[in-house]
Image (tube, rainbow, N blue to C red):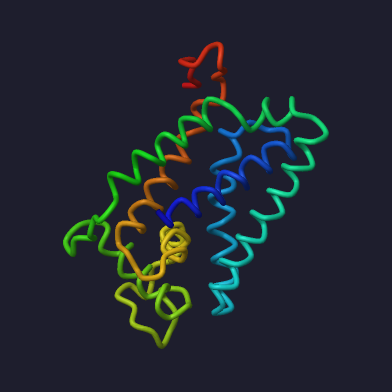
Length: 193
């Protein structure tokens, strides 16, 4: 159940960014997910990927404080930008993806073998997966795509491959969520295609 913490960080940060920038949750979620990835990558360039993890946690805490202050001032803005049908769909997908990815293993022959080995390297060594001097199966691949899995695994006391798959699923789904930007509670099936 520790995997609820990264999802809460993502939800709080996205809700805070949505309210602050006055953009719907559906539009801000991919930006927040990519921002988390870029923050981890930037700190990882200096061989301090764990610092990037703590930076993301601090940004989530700041977003939570902003949400509390914003909610006290005006509830309408938060409801308009953060509490959207897209946010509800993301939460439902996060629950579904959790049960699908729980206890799954990365199989050596599939496309996830790269994602699993690089994230495991980042988890145990605390550096990017293609850093010289560490075991790296794919030293020339940029590790940016693996950082969403690393973010989820970092919350756990031990490395779990299912968390890597879970993080990758949520990143992929977040990139599709802007298709729901025109939905509302009154017209939930309206989609932007």
